[in-house]
Length: 155
Image 1: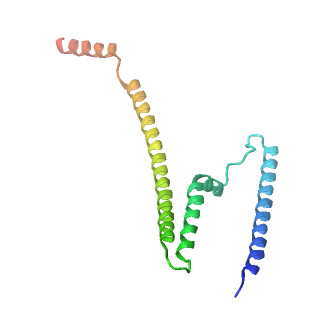
Image 2 (image 1 turned 30 degrees about the vertical axis):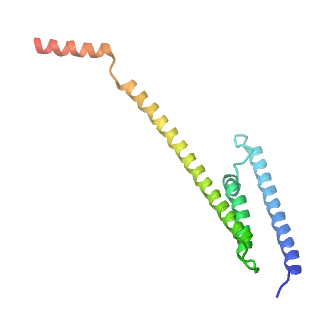
Image 3 (image 1 turned 90 degrees about the vertical axis):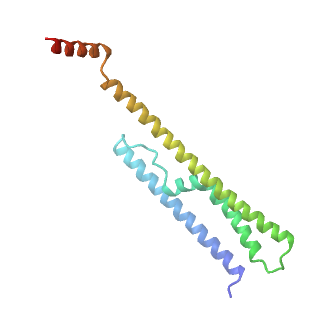
């Protein structure tokens, strides 16, 4: 059975290899962007963020605190010692921590969705007002239309 002495160097090797490959990829990407900017100055020099970066920026709270609570929960559940009050309290606390992380994430997403919905409603209201102002007849033209209608009916 593999021991910790084998897994630690293997993990270090894999980790450093992944970091080196990611850095090389990012450097090549930056050089391509600079060359493209030199060829056409209208191309922005700063590229948009990578989807993985956007994912981590958007979900860092769940990833960090969810992982901490979940690892603590797994540690407490798979421990070989008999269950004590302290361990039961730790299990309850880490479970509550997981629930709090997910509830706060859902609330954050709902507030963002409500904010976007409110912006759309305000934009629609402004657009409808603008259309109504353009299409509504002015008071002077309403009076002229009434006078014309009376004139045609009376003559």
